[in-house]
Image (cartoon, rainbow, N blue to C red):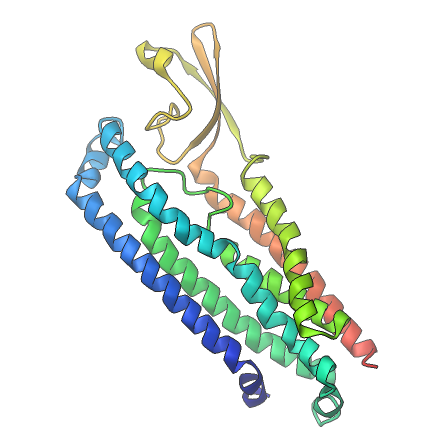
Length: 294
């Protein structure tokens, strides 16, 4: 089964390797440039000395310089999980049913359910490795920018668990769509469209909905009158916090913000959403395959 799975999916494996190389080259070049500028501008020493309070102009110049170059890399990764997951998942069953080769493949000594579970285990393992590798190189590249700006910026956030779980979700939807439609191309299209739904929900949770906000009351001081949501560091005093609103009440400032410390909490919520959809899709595909093939 391992040899058969490799023969059937080696094209997708080569494409994944090529995509990783492209992302890695872009990320390493960008990360090296960031680190060089970070060191040249003395940002590290400034952050260690004042926590960011004494180097506002340097931080602003650094973020303005690299926010633009980071966007193309993020845009490239936005659609990658959906396209790649659907392209790998839909042919797994869609091709067998479309060409009629299932009559040979599933009538051998290996039962069809075992055949599918083995294929899923091997392909999912490969996708996890691919997703983890892309996430690692992107995280390394963005590390200097993460020190002085918001880490969670939907929908361009591909650190943590997001990318890998999103990829698995698209793959699972592709497997189910290929089985239901018995057509590879149609399965890819339907899977990608279906993947957009959980992706939109994840974007809303980490964007407009801001489900992990915190409210903090700060006594106004001399600098309170100049406080703004876009100040660096933010009025919360912690780089990476995303200030959403400021309200002055008497001599106090009420700040609503999303703490940088909630990054992993949000990652786990998004990952849980994607994995729940993936598990439901794969479970349905296995059940349907076990019950019917005609």
